[in-house]
Length: 189
Image (tube, rainbow, N blue to C red):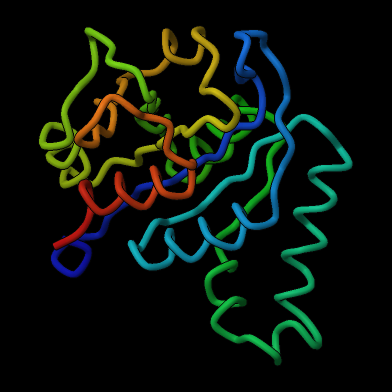
């Protein structure tokens, strides 16, 4: 699919508002492994941009320093493929800022699709969203860290994507794995 049409899929890794394991709304910590790995997955699936979304200034600065390290100087020389993967990685303060940036870029609001590990009655399946992607409109996929996106994000999204289901009762994928699986289901040839 990536070769036959121009896809306009964007991924946002949300660190607030998300739940912790006891159901409290928190801000989760940015992990550098997520940034590296998700940037590489996004590049592999021709994702237009990957947003790391956190309200914490020090966390945003950490992401910006990491990106700068691999874009310039020794990091860029040492591992050019890492540089290539991070070219479309961005840092934003919140979801509204992310949506606003994409709206300015495209001249229209992106279709916002939230993801959730739980079954939700109003969710759309992968086949439906694949068809939406093929239309060429900008799509923003929201992925929660911690124990998932806060319920108002799910309520405000244009769609909620069906959860990724394994073969047993256990369902708590690392976000990096969930993003890779979902992008493969939505974008792969």
